[in-house]
Image (cartoon, rainbow, N blue to C red):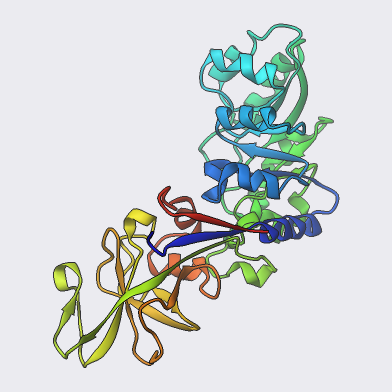
Length: 355
């Protein structure tokens, strides 16, 4: 067995859910567990987050699995459905579906009168991705309210700029124009809005990345908001080499030593989910010291600088991200975001659960 593993800390997931609740104490919580629980394992995340008021995801088959596992609280399909045949299990398993296009509306109106489906009416407030235009909402609502098979309707939007300096002011102004005079529950806030904009919390919040201990903000790490990393990707040194001045290491020789020093070889590569594009200098923790990667990441291995880490040897623990090496810092060095690294964890990496 290769020494690589990913430890999933279930207590961290529970703690982070508590942080979301503290920020929005009067709101109900849809815990977002899409993309296989952001790489943490969809059922594993669901078990740890079972005190949420509901779950939100993309995949219909995963929603059905939740119901069959005995979960009885609301389950929201964030992108809704894609074919008319999906409406039968949505109704049978009492799932809540988003609706964001006229095509979906037409399909939804084919439901039988006893379907009893809850709907989240999604409209566009500037993301320009999914959602009805604000001026379409009254006619869509009229259709939904006129159908006996539709039960509760909730207004839903998604903020494009809650994580940057532009904020949500413009989006909230659009929302208020749409919602004026409508006595409907609302679901607006993603992780960034939960942490920054209490005025957005409303009836349902939808925490995603914050549940997994990663910050939604480019200039912060989760710990800045009392979030705990739920995933630690770790391995070990499997070789130690001495480079002479002028020696190169790895494919293409993209790193060349300017002076003699030690290099460690780690059992982790892009086939494990580590970003191949991570450059020399990406932070990595060897033992109790932070150091850097060297050269090009290969399929099964990467190299690290052992300068000043005299006690490092074959078998020394290496943290690629997580405990003592925030995934946000690794992602920033690699020119991406923590979301991508967590979601990219490869199936071949063994999982260790810690409660």
